[in-house]
Length: 288
Image (cartoon, rainbow, N blue to C red; front, side, top):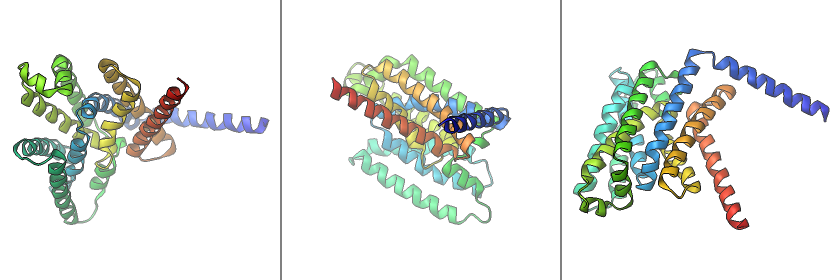
């Protein structure tokens, strides 16, 4: 038994040393800062995405970003600079199509997503030679985040915070009852399109951290977890932001210590947190 405790202490000491050494590197410091900012952004926008049932929309925008990524690789441009305009145009076009057709929104999203994915796969087959840039964006590589990425993320976070907090009353009413918001003179369409712009930018910058395949989880899981513990909107919003930020940092540290992929590490931490809180709330309900 003494040997077991000694071994645990030894592993903890090694882990602490590894962690301390890791955070000394500039790339790790940028990755932690980036994960924190993206966690805040994901928690903030994700709370509205969850309540407005836009998770499939963000899912479609994230997966369709494959076209922007492959275009950036083919044109030998920074994929981030291709992702920003592409996700913005794609998000606005999809919202316009939903408004202009009688089809259900999930049908429109499925059609556009399938078409965009097909185009992305065909374009990716045209790439010759090394495809490292494509793979890193598909699966996430926050360790490669640069100063420009941090600035872009910070700008999107500041813009989203200012817009949502200054119009918080209108946003809450629009979320809970769009018809009443329309009657009260709130520019519903303007706010809807503005939110899609912010959401598209958020997807574009978050892809750097978690990749195209997991970006939707990055937006949805923190907010869904917060919803399990909160029955008031402001508490729900703050909890979602905190969960997004903390889980991103923890996932980033786990990724660095165990040499796991950064995106999946962040999402798996969020997933375990969701399952833990879900089980805890269910147990409390049974006890009560």
